[in-house]
Length: 370
Ligand SMILES: Cc1ncc(COP(=O)(O)O)c(C=O)c1O
Image (tube, rainbow, N blue to C red):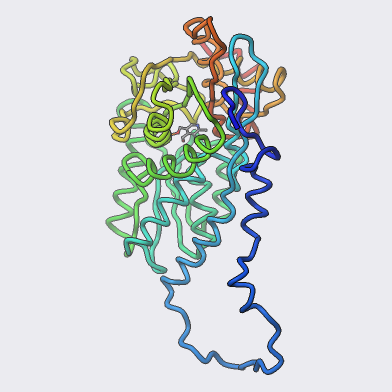
């Protein structure tokens, strides 16, 4: 099928998501012949084989978990001058794009023998990555200690406290005025003092890049025959590194546009207090060196708020701060896009709007922004 503008969206075409799930359920004929009712089957009260090794149980649970990570939809948005599509990462099982690296990092660490059933996973995160790790470590039977700070949204903190027996909340600001360096120092302290501790290190873990190369970008490549622009919010840079590498292989002329918040130091802006989590950082993330970036757009937080509101009021998408930032970048960039033909443009919507109800979606809160 020749298609330049419309992705193969859900429910249509041979590669539709609905079809994919049905295919997964199909049983190959050569396997089916072994599935039959055995009238002579006996039921043992004790196992006849040795119980499975705990690590193989971990692998089996991770395989089960993989089945819950289905492709996220690409939906068209009516914006003049382009064919714009939003990739709805909030439809991942725990609710954000961070489900992908959380799952993949655990899987790779288990495969390499770095994690076993005794491991305590430790990570510094004030949001989506900690939530995904909390759910997935719980599901596979591992302990997890998230290291958080006072900027965490109430919804994330409640979620983490319900799932994790121990949550460490730092309160001392670092020399940049933020908490990131204090959180990382706490992670190092916990790793040095807790036996069998494993730091997933989302800021410098190549498995996070691989997660987005294989999963996030793999889905884009499966759905789009051509792509001109991809707008991607940056924090640890895991997403942009993995997605940019795969998209450049598949669509050599695609332009990867990194989106950051003003006041974040990732692309050299002067550090300033930022209020909206998700996108931006007070350090240059090491994974950034793995990304292939054509251009950068820095968005002030006021525009993020407008972007989130417009996505909700005009397009019906209730999405979080980084999605509004990416959407604002698309709108700013539109003037630079070719006029001769409508380009196909993709923006990543990394999470839902719910945790941002008391901030981005509260006009009184937004009015205080500079
Ligand atoms: C909501 C949201 N958007 C975007 C990002 C940026 O992704 P990455 O850390 O891969 O750069 C994050 C990262 O935490 C996020 O939580």
